[in-house]
Amino acid sequence: MRRLDRRAFRGGFILEKILGPVSSGHIELRSADPRANPAVTFNYFQESEDLERCVHGIQTIERVIQSRAFANFTYANASVESIFTDSANFPVNLLPRHVNDSRTPEQYCRDTVMTIWHYHGGCQVGAVVDDDYRVFGVQRLRVIDSSTFKYSPGTNPQATVMMLGRYMGVKIQAERWRK
Image 1 (cartoon, helix red, strand yellow):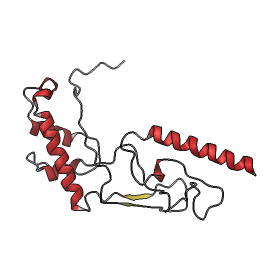
Image 2 (tube, rainbow, N blue to C red; image 1 turned 60 degrees about the vertical axis):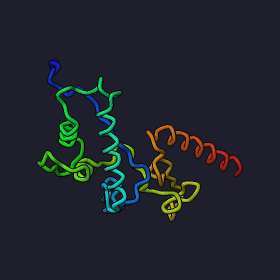
Image 3 (cartoon, one colour; image 1 turned 30 degrees about the vertical axis):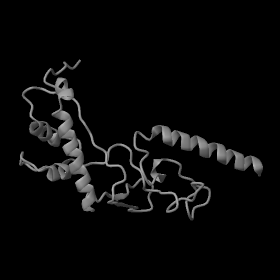
């Protein structure tokens, strides 16, 4: 049995989410093999407005951390700068890190941005599937998941995906009963 390491990280993270970024990436199939991973290009901050929005979010987080209401949730010996440095060095994405601890908010955004957990947009309605989620050019195949969303629902999309699945399941069943 492994002993609990008392030096383990004790804290949390404040994340910012940019809803509806202006920049967009793309996804491409590398081969016809369904087991092969696609090539994904995120293009974070391709549009300068997204970087400005990220910096604004970081500045908002700084104000929250420095607020009196948040004082009970911080350590006296941890500055905002050290919190950002520690979080930038936390191993949560594969981006190369900059060793300079005096980063600008812009560099902090570039070093820490990532897409978290809920990918969407690779199979959008109108581009890859029709309004009934049928894949264009493929017989008897539908895609009904978060890849069909143009925009994230703004929070954990699990309930939205479940409701979409239920809605489309009922619709498909009704179509079959009519035949």
